Image (cartoon, rainbow, N blue to C red; front, side, top):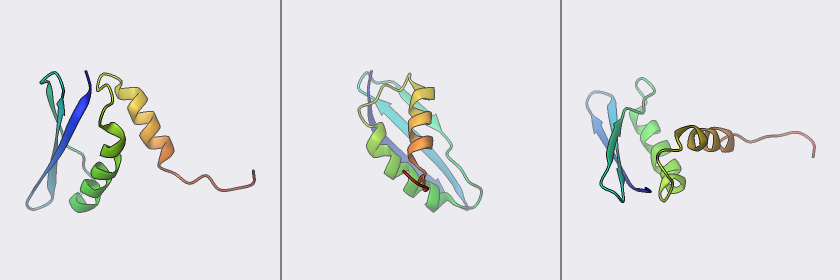
Length: 78
């Protein structure tokens, strides 16, 4: 099973829902949220969505770790 589509739905005053669709017809819903920052979160969902398309949705922990760890600049010496 592979993720094929992510769709965000913003609702006033500041809520957002995420629909995740797969190639096998399985659909999941989530609520990505940072209170009062729906547009910011929506932008992040679309940026991370580029990575998620084509991935196996059953690998939740692995996908989370990649997105979380890849999202930070690691400064310092090489």
